[in-house]
Image (tube, rainbow, N blue to C red; front, side, top):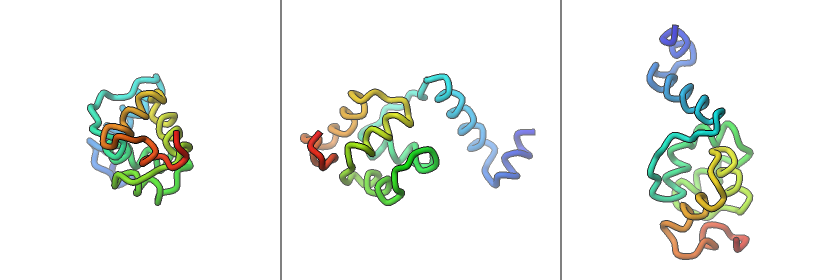
Length: 108
């Protein structure tokens, strides 16, 4: 059955299962464990989900994926969508830079 559903959505069966499991875990308030190296890695890993389930413009997501700046609102939208605490999302944002304002222009 899963094979048919995945084929009808034109995705690999393993990708469909992964997405279904991820959505269920998120519904339960559990985010799959992953050691993200920074905010860009987090956004890159969850790009499709963030694009589909947030109001973050695609251009902004692409910019964050490249390690560019983001607004405070976009940062918090990522945290809310992925059920990550503000502290954790800020820590990810500062992992690759020493000053969060380089990521968030509004001077967090």
